[in-house]
Length: 154
Image (tube, rainbow, N blue to C red):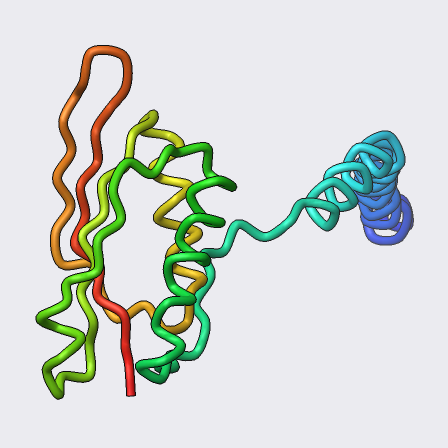
């Protein structure tokens, strides 16, 4: 009886505990094998997605002669975003002064989502100094956007 109580019973309890632990590990391995392909699919889809980062180019400035390239770049950005440029007027007073910025008054027509795309496109222009003012008004069949945009010049 002593041999059973001292030797066999503790050994039996230890083996039954290990068997239970073994069964838990087998269940975890089975779960991992079943979920492995799902995990791999999620990882692959995450790697294939393009990062949704906003453009942030190094700031530069244009010479006064090259300042007219902003009009072409702005029209390209507006066309990409689906907006219609109604008015694009450079402020002559700021171009004559010895300032390092040049003001443009711009009026656009389109939809709100397209304007958002337009702002992202403008963020990619390295010589864009700042946008001073944005005025948004709902029109009859489209929204009207008015902006004051400053570009950096030398």
